[in-house]
Image 1 (cartoon, rainbow, N blue to C red):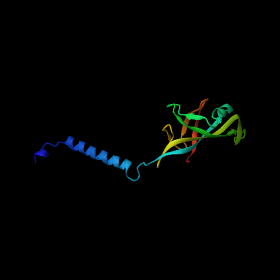
Image 2 (image 1 turned 120 degrees about the vertical axis):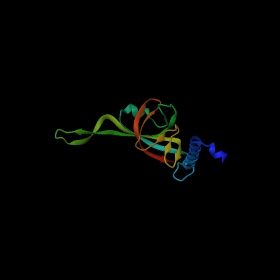
Image 3 (image 1 turned 45 degrees about the vertical axis):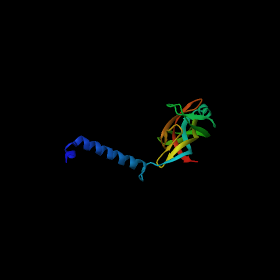
Image 4 (image 1 turned 90 degrees about the vertical axis):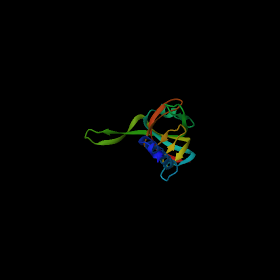
Length: 156
């Protein structure tokens, strides 16, 4: 009986906090629905850049290393570069819109391969950045930098 007289509300709250932390850690790492790290795998992602000049297309050549501008860490190697004339919309005098090529501009698809981490919910490149389809990224190569959107991610 003497033991219960020495317990106060702070002791109870500390014990409750410890129990909640233990259950939270169990749920995050071991329970179904938690993130399961599937390990390191080769990941290939396609990055689309619209309306760039020809020298920007040349700057991102096959075999070049791409890096994250913030961390300066390499995030992969370029395995393919495909470009096509950029297409834009022009308004005619009658108010209608037509698709027309933009002079001296190209839409470019850059395919990057990296050794990254894969989980059941996300992909991470070698620079530890999360890869998401539809997310915009800024990348640097040896000769330039481009801002574009990720169109496709796949495991190899």
